[in-house]
Structure formats: structure tokens, C-alpha cells
Image (tube, rainbow, N blue to C red; front, side, top):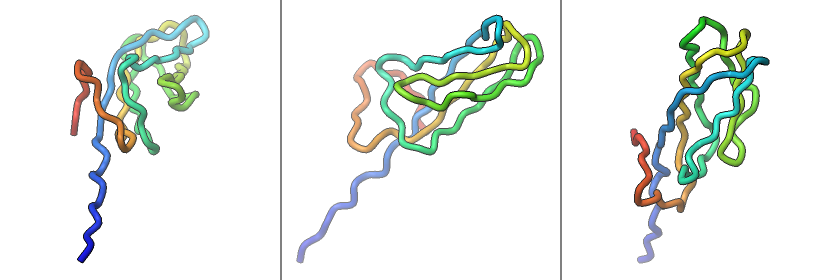
Amino acid sequence: MVRSRKPPAPETVVYRGEVWTDGGGYATVGLPAEACPLEPPVEYELQDLEPPSRARVTGELEDGRFTIHTDEPYVKVAWRLRGRRSAGHLPHPHQEEERT
């Protein structure tokens, strides 16, 4: 009898931080260099901290970066990115990821 092993499900990882938008209301968020590639779909959470505005993702995650835009310039935005680690990718030994 031959049994095939099912590959383990990719692990969910979360990255988070804060960024200020520029005079046009844009900011590009770069993940840490040791961040692992994520499989789609990727979930984004944005919260404008100060001053109040509406924040949204205007450029999807690509090459470890994504872009946000707010209705007002110079807004501090908290961001959270959640996704599944690409299959076969091992975490960096010093990588600090929130695992769920």
C-alpha cells in the first residue's frame, strides 16, 4: 500500500506597523527584509490614527511593498497585513512574526 503525504497547510503570518502619509496622502509600506512571501489572498487592515481621514490600499503587495492613500495629507496610519506563508518557505531564524 502506498500512502501519499499531504503537504502541511501554509502557516498564517501577520505583519504590522505604522506609517505617515506624504503631502499627497500616499505612503509606501515596506515589509522587513526577512519577511516571507505570502500566498493570495492577503488581508489588509488600515486605521487612521491622527488626524482622522479615510485610508485605503491603492497598490497591492508586490516585492514586499504595498501603497496606501488617505483623503488628507500627513496622516499617521496603523497597518496590519495577514496572509499565508508560501509553501516551502522556512522562517528566518530571527524573524519575528505573529502566528495565528
